[in-house]
Length: 140
Image (cartoon, rainbow, N blue to C red):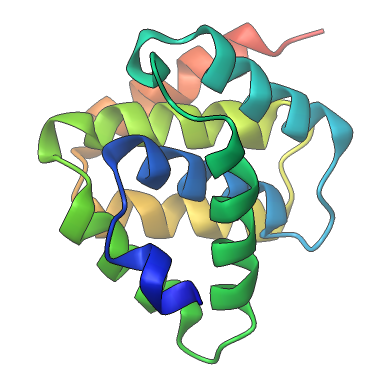
């Protein structure tokens, strides 16, 4: 079933998949992270017209991929195939917001963010600015 879904990923599906992946990276999906994902999908212009039912489909796709040995590589392959390069920084910003949503960054989340930076070939200075913005938005 995952195979059928992955061939028709929209840019929005890719963004959701990365947010879910960051949330699931530490094997503990927190309520604050889920709220951040739902809020992004409901409020941001990039998700205008996005079918909310796709959230559960994309979550299941990410979970299925994470159960496979090379699942993370497969996820990044799908992202590179379906996400326009102009949205790479948006994807990283959303991933950072989800990682910061619960007020702590665990090692697994930091490693995945590093992998996202590498896979999307983001400029280190731009990535640092995005990270700084996420940190500023989530201070208590």
